Amino acid sequence: MHNIGVAVAGTGFIGPVHVEALKRLGVQVTGILGSRPEKSEAARQRLGLPRAYAQFDDILADDAVQAVHLAVPNALHYDMAKRALLAGKHVMCEKPLAMNADESAELVDLAAQTGLHAGVCYNIRFYPLNLEARDRIRRGEVGTVFSVVGRYVQDWLLYDTDYNWRVLADQGGALRAVSDIGTHWMDLVCSITGLHVEAVFADLTTVHPVRKRPVGEVETFSGKRAAHQDVETVPVETEDCGSVLLRFEGGGRGVLWVSQVTAGRKNGLRYEIAGSKCALAWNSEQPNELWIGHRDQPNAVLMRDPALVADLARGSINYPGGHNEGFPDTFKQCFRAFYHAIDTGADPAEALYPTFEEGHREILLCDAILQSHREQRWVTV
Image (cartoon, rainbow, N blue to C red; front, side, top):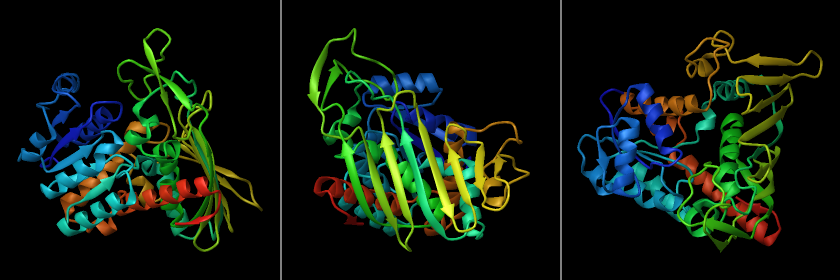
C-alpha cells in the first residue's frame, strides 16, 4: 500500500473522510482537488497534503498517482471515472456510480476492458458485525432468508430552509433519499444475504416541493439554515421520504423505509433479517452489537470483539472488544480491501470491496424504483 499514490477529488463532507482513512492505512495521498483552486489549497493546508490540484487534468497527468478517489457531486462521477480509467488509474467512487444505467454500464465495461480495480464506496458493509452477519448466512447458520425489513432515516433536510445541491434533480439525480441513503441499505442487505432484488413497488413523497436556498452553496450535514441569510426559492422534485417493497429472487420479501426528514434521527440505518433458523438485527447507531433472535432458546447479543467473531469480520477489526470502532473505520476497512486487491493483483470479480458492477446494479434498482413510483405498480429489475 505504501507504494500506491492516491489523489482525492472533493473537499466537502466526504472527501476529507477519504483522506483521513487513507492516511491511517499508510497510503500516500498525493494531493486533493476542490471545485476551485482556492478550495484545493485550503483543503491541502487543513489536511496536511503535499499538493493542491487546480483541475482534474492535473491529477490524470500526475505519474505519482496510481488511483483516484471521487468524492464530488453525483453529476461528475461518470465523466471523471471514465477519464481516470482511460488514464490508467484505479478508481474508488462515491455512490451513485453515475446518473443513469447507460453511464454506469459503460463504466462497468470500461473497468473490465482496462483490468483496473474500480470500486464504489458502500462503506457500511465494513462495519465488522455486518461482515459477521454475511459470514453467518454463508455458513448456513441463519437458514433460508424469509424477509429483510429496515430503514435508513436522517433529519438534516427536515425544514424547508434546509438546502443542499442533492435536492436538485439535475445535480443529484431524479431520486434523492433513495439514491443517497437508500442504496446504502439495499447494497448492505444484498451483500449480507447474497440475494438479488427481482422486483420493486415504491411509494415516495416530496414533503417540501419548494425550498429556500441561501445565497452561496451549503455543505452536506453543515446544519446551516437560511434564517439570517439572503435566500431564493427553488422548486424541488426529488423525494424526501418513502417506502419500497422488495421481492428477492428465491421468494424472500423486503421492506425499506427511507427518510431525510425524520426529526432526531441523524443517521440511522437498521435491518432485521428473518431466516428459517434464526434472525439477525443491526443498528448503525449501536454498530458494535448484533442481535441474534431464536425461537427455542434465549436471544443473544454479539459484541464486536475479535475473539468472538469469525475470520471474515476479524479481518476488519483493529481494536480489542470494548474499544469501539465506528464510521471512520468503515472507510479504512473498505479502502484496505480495495488496495489489498490492487497490491496482490486479485481478480476484481472476487474482490471484497463493492465493485462498479455492484454500483451499476444499484442504479438499475433506482431506475426500477422511480418507474414504480411514477406508474404505481410492481416493476421488474
